[in-house]
Length: 357
Image 1: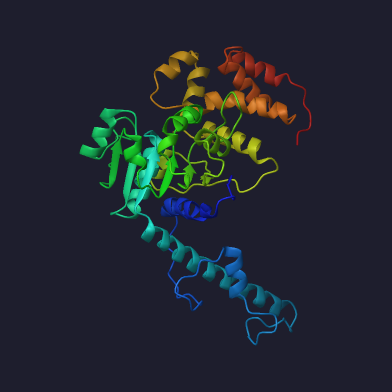
Image 2 (image 1 turned 90 degrees about the horizontal axis):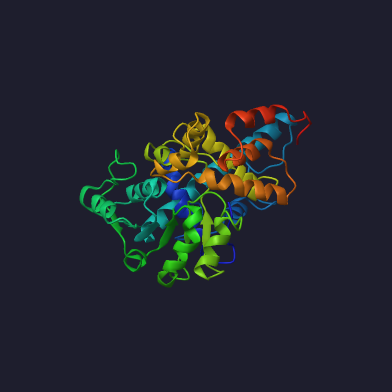
């Protein structure tokens, strides 16, 4: 997760992102806070420290172990239980605060993932206005009149508090948070075209995955550059997850840390896309393998296969860090029509067998 920590309002969008994905978790019991103040907003680390008794406090739970391994295990167990109770209480309290103060959320883009995220957020609070900024008048009308995105995920009904518009000024006016769901390759030009309507303090939550093909920039770099505001608050909501999974309220996962976050994140997204049946990138690969031409495949699809553009960008990034990615390199060559899938497999099988890290 790439975070712009230079702005103090980074925590509200982070909490909203967690709120949006919290539908996948069982509801946590709301416990009475131990802090006597009306509202406690300390960070998790600070709150944990403040909840813990001082070293000399007179408490049974905080006593040093006196009976060897059994007592040590008891102390550890009690500490863990306290941590879990505090975590649930803190998460529930802060999530409720965000819902109470949020009046409007805007979603940029009306594709599959933007639609799915809009539905998730709108379902959390019936009187929350969720504005979707689209380009297609017909899709706008289908969302506003029939509560269905006629182009993407048409089999799912959308909450009635979702409003679609083609007007950037109307969509962004008064928004508390902004979900960016425009494909990466079009993000710079799109954001540049609406930058005059964007409040410099509006927190952005990026849902777009991949790298910008020509510059190898991630969304954490694209957003502030395109908006002309290096201090625009934003976070990146990580996956991998897919729109249908969100609509079905299925759990998702993410990579928390890696040796090289930028390259590992890009590879992770490609691998995730290649392994799930619902992935557009996987469908492109299957059709390429069966002998279809890339141009014909892309022309027949109404969704963006980010893997097609990202494959070459990942290879360029790998070259920068001197990392060998033979399979992904072969995929990129197939996409560029320099190899047939059959020839690529033969060349990969003939590569020297070396130890890889």
